[in-house]
Length: 329
Image (cartoon, rainbow, N blue to C red; front, side, top):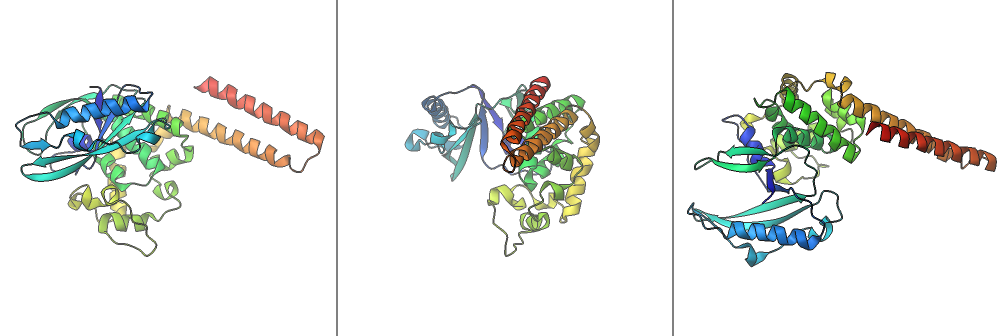
């Protein structure tokens, strides 16, 4: 079946020996396009059922998915461009019952070929996972997540992923191409990229207290106005042994900066394609948007003849915008 493994179960395989990374949900990408809700539900349910009913003498027994077959968000997922649904499965491992959440994303454009991974579990022999997210996409997705949402766990992962021996110049180029395409899809503001590659996280997250969030994430210190996050998402002790994370925020950022610079992910990239092209595109769009907003504002205070002139300016600006977009896509 065309399912690609991603997320923390893959990330932990790229961390150096001795560095722990506790996985949470099991994340998959279905690599074929789906158009109908019932088709998605049937394919995913059949897949999970086959897995839970597979008999292997490995000390693990799954409860058949047919006993509690459901998918969260299936009713709403088909309305999204890149939907994700999830369910829960239950298994018994050496006598202990464990619940496991399974997420499946689909209709997600995957520009690069999946990587075959020899997976080394905590116990037992290594085995091959034929389709896993390649290192280039792991890094680009982590950076993209950092641009749109403050998550220290992504920065922790990045610190090690970009230091992996396989992260060479070719993989770095693939990473940057994928990152730019993700930013185009989400219309990420160019200032966010500039702040990230200059390691200016205070500018990247101007509306939050990074120090307060760090104190909560790393040390469990809460402030009176602090909103609690999901523990598995945000607490350091739930993703690794905290001995691997500096106690102080500046040291954490310095480790990240050192890893990024060693990997060639430096501020110089802001002046090189494809990052520079994206920044130029975003700046041009922002300038046109400001011009349109200005002319729209002027229509509320001008005469009819001036209003006609303003409309002409709007059309001219839109024409420039469309011409520029088609020229640069």
